[in-house]
Length: 450
Image (tube, rainbow, N blue to C red):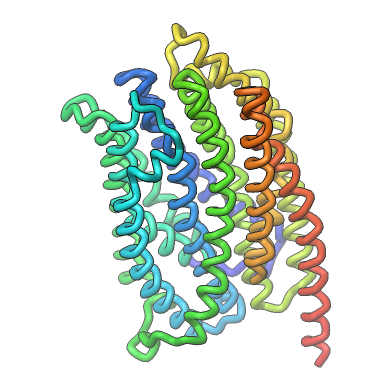
């Protein structure tokens, strides 16, 4: 169901759009958590460490896929807001073509370099084989990850956040069932958890493709739209690649941080993995809210309505901060109990490590409300390169802590690396977002007057 966000109350539109996305993200993180919980509870803490030892490189590669697809969807949303449907369909076709090309290239590169990547992360020999098997299957599923995220991003760009949620919810239930089957029945170990994730992601992507072909005429390219345009391709790349690199640059800092943590031993790897799973789950509202605000900004950019853009971004950031305060309190008060979803109560050292990480993150959780909403809003307005710098700032924060402070303070430094990155990124992105909105407003006022 397509929906215009250029008319009506901004906050209501944003929250209505964000809710199905939030539910979809929660389902997605639920099955990610189930992967970890089933692995940790049935195969042991070493297997859990094997799954988590490569989480930062997964974020690097899959994050690039997510950012790329989100960037490709921005011109679609802008043309939809401007009601320029023929051009919009050309963007859809060109985006699908280049996504297919990138899927082949990225899959080949990551599969070939899989072992070298894990060596670079200093993965302990005890868990290296399991970590390699898990990561290899995840990399083989990159084409399905790109397929689902591109098509769901295109659907959201025309205001439909409900349909991707429904497919993702079905995929989550399927993934959990396959986890039990592959691990407990087929005895595939951590490889089974990865296979379940990839297969369920493939189902989501294929269902989205079938739906668009059958139900969304406005998106389905016609014969005259099926031309690879250098102008359209160039704009897609100018939006998609910086947004993909934004995720990846941020992930480089996470990789350095994880490599430093991997060197501290399997106790801290397991504790950090449990904390990361909870962190990813608790970040779902930020992701949904930020994407909703970005879509709102992009459509109203196409409709030339600067005042609505300002109002939507401000209200979205306020909601993000309020959620951050509440969620941070939950991490502070109940972090240890949450960690017990993944770790047996007998593993006291692992639980202590996980709780320390969660408690200290909770103190700074509110900063993510501003950081995520402002950064993605800048992208929605078409300034992807400015948003990419925010990722570089976060990377620098994590690298400095990991390289200079982990050798001195060990795991204590690890538990403050994220917060350092968030605080630096928030300060930068807030200043740049205000500047970008002012520039867009002045340009639109001038163009409307002319």
